[in-house]
Image 1: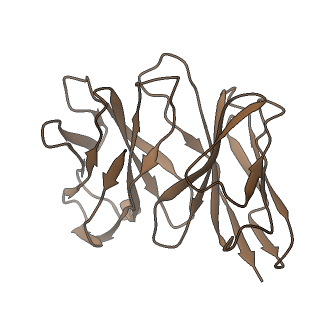
Image 2: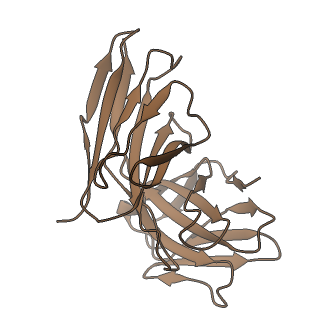
Length: 115
Length: 118
């Protein structure tokens, strides 16, 4: 089945540690995205990539880093510079062709807690 | 700058009744797309319906329809015949800068919690 996988589902981190969240898709989508969701809030864009080896900062990129070495993979690193990293992280992908939809498909999310 | 506004407090609806979830947006771009997503308590985001700014008719997908009023910049989601499984958070989102491809970023509203009563 085609879809997006994120791992781990739950992640605990000590202050001062970097952690990497995995996101893999087999939908053959060019574009991938990382969002952060805080309790009772909407999604805020961290980083996005519309093609391999290229990515752009979203609205809240500070303290995060990404790479896009393969079309299928878009890992997110939460660095120690991120002041308040406890949140729910969602990865998404979409096509970029000439379709009137190009809706984003989401993974199941990773819940990160800083201890 | 884009802006999506969802200001309703938690919404309640009786099973089998219809409910409208409000969404207003702000953009100066004539070409944009509007999306609604559902987020159950499990956290996954489920795409429900899409409306393009140039679409002549309101979008419909099964029990979901979008009441698109371009002049008022509103894109309200209507759920007919509510079911218990409709209890979730609902997010309105917008993509501007072209309907496809070049700019695929979405801006999300803060969401509305819908509870369906048996």
